[in-house]
View (cartoon, rainbow, N blue to C red):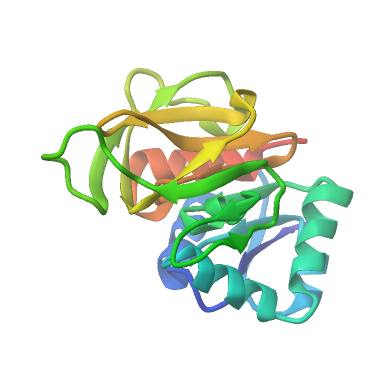
Length: 215
């Protein structure tokens, strides 16, 4: 029986690219998956695995997600009450924070306590937004980051970064005029600042691992 994988459409993500990456990774993953892009609460409620993407400013993404009637409750039911696998990407990761300071102070989902603040490298020659490839520093083992020996590289595009309250929630970091959070997680929830759909082999490996992840 196929698992239902839902990519949440709230008007703020690279949906076509994300869908293509998940379908490609699913070909080599264990099991069978029906991959669906949807803005319907009933699809999220029926999902076995969820991907929350995100592109743009924190406040805009937050407002768009909360504007979908019943969607935040459905996501909370999936991730926190039923403890099913949940993956956040880019601003989809940032929305897990307690609050974001981009444009204005906005409440996030608050699932992994922290604040999303402006990325200010301590090297003035480094540009913001941070855009390009960086080495991931894996701080602890995690099933979604299996088979990434050595120094994996991932692709980033962002001007704000996640400051977690609890260091144990940080899975990986990257260096860009200082050390910054690249991936976070707790229990059944995992998320990355970098774009899996643009990170080639590393991104596909991460998605495949997420598909194979048994909670």
